[in-house]
Length: 302
Ligand SMILES: Cc1cc2nc3c(=O)[nH]c(=O)nc-3n(C[C@H](O)[C@H](O)[C@H](O)COP(=O)(O)OP(=O)(O)OC[C@H]3O[C@@H](n4cnc5c(N)ncnc54)[C@H](O)[C@@H]3O)c2cc1C
Image (cartoon, rainbow, N blue to C red; front, side, top):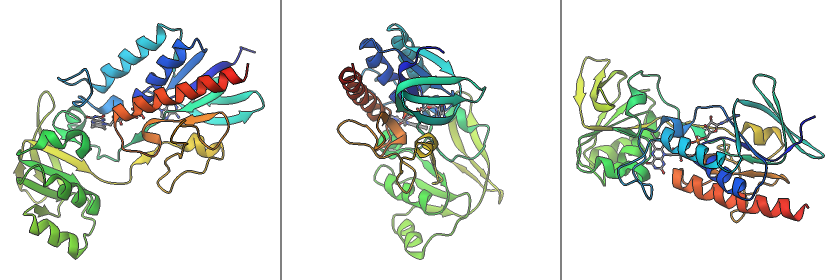
């Protein structure tokens, strides 16, 4: 049987890659397993990261992180981890192709997936002209004609929060989930145009530039920017749940705020799968934080 790794990391987004860089520099044998699809593979441009004033795409950031960690001997494999089991000597993970990975400590950096409609034009625009997070990209819509496309109250709350940034705002309730009369009143009071109708097509220009939407009722709304807010995001905490870790009501994995360790011995969790504001920079910080405490755990074990 192959010697177990010191650390197994599931997820090669900003959180997993940053942890891998530190663990590699501590000389711990580290394996990163990644399925290749997450929020950081979707975002075409992060515009608020130190060192990247002109923005950097998620793919580029991930690649830089991977190559950086590989300099210290960290290994990467593409696979979807299906199961996680605790064993006496550590953890045993099984991948979708039947491969088995063994390690003393486990770091879950599996992120979350936004619930988004299956519009072919959407992906090229994400992070470039269509956004998901007002903390990240509220700045990008300042005084710009903006449409929030969403579902029920999730979309309405997004529109209300963006009203501080622009007064040229409309909310299209694509799934037509009913709004409370109070919310409808608030939208009207803030002069946010409200449409309860399905979007039939996103209008975009090559290069990921949003131009507007065509609605099922035949209307066309033009705008420079959009936000999407559908609610019901999928927090990828299944592996933690398999290990018996009790997650928060929305499935985020709770951790110690100082160490990022979960309640399960030997298991850490960082990034969007945990409980915090969902930013790449925070995910990186947490990855570093967990690596420091994983190193302490490995040293105290020797
Ligand atoms: C459109 C958009 C714009 C954004 N803009 C900004 C911004 O401007 N600034 C900012 O700071 N943040 C921004 N964010 C948020 C940012 O992308 C996330 O906070 C960040 O990606 C979280 O990193 P993570 O490593 O926790 O998760 P992710 O980046 O989601 O990575 C998780 C990885 O884990 C892998 N994985 C999951 N489950 C498994 C499994 N079972 N087996 C193997 N691999 C698995 C996935 O394939 C994925 O690669 C934006 C997000 C989106 C979608």
